[in-house]
Length: 377
Image 1: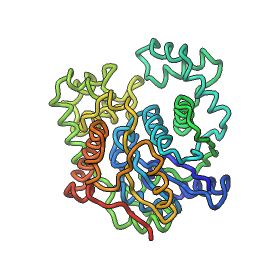
Image 2: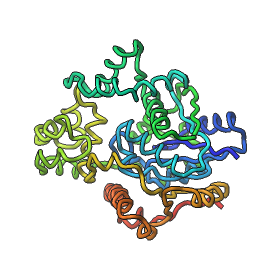
Image 3: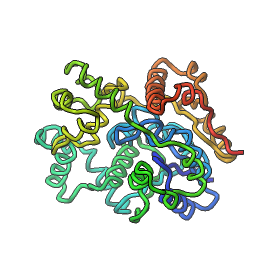
Image 4: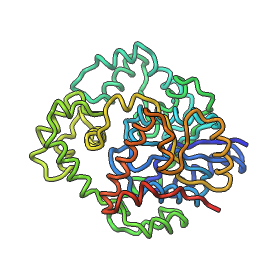
């Protein structure tokens, strides 16, 4: 049986994700098993997820995924490089994954693989480090790539992530075989979120089974999170702020200088967004400061996995995975005592993210920390 992995956020699960499941089963056969490695309470844009990780995982299972495991914080809220490296490292450590499927704007696995090979070259890495510091890292990287290789570096979001997935697979010498499909215009997570948050009827964007789950929930209100993050920026010294992930390169001082002029986090991000600092980078940095995520936390590989949901086939795969995996897979909060000291540090970051999510939902942390995985009978 082929086991294909997806790295995802499902923020929220929408009809475009159904198309990906269909692509996998068309390519690998209807009997292929699908494992989703899904972001938890924090997502790559440097925000909290729109619905809880357990609700999103349950929706995925009811829509055709067999097993959902959590991509833990801090990797889930890292830049494309750290998001991809953390996810690939975890998938590779399970020792049961045959293939990785990801959507891309180009749908060109050869072009993406070539780009992944190029960005791993020492000359390129060195040139990017010494490039014009007045531009964003992404713009510098694109300019260096164009100058060195005579072609454009992929610039669309999913192509960028795809290159990072492929680079991580090459670096780790993983046996996981990647394949991509061309994402067609249509359903998007950002469009679906926008509809939900504006109070529009999003039922035509979300599969029926997922809509049944999400329609009972209130979408995330970031008012409390915004206030807490802004408070931390205002009341933490510049030197202390600079210790957190994403606060390097002058970001800490820039945020600090503008914090007194902003009424909320969104206004602060808007004031500070420029050619050098993207809004996503700034949001990730603010979230890291609030959760206490340091740069060294991002550089370590994930040392544990957390079960969020499974169906019958997923439980069978999980049983085999536990025998082969290089990292422990936990199913409940009480299992954390089985983790190594280093893994426990990572686990505590996940708990902080869950507690922040609960606070923003005006719920007791226990509701999220002690929620059992969803198991489809």
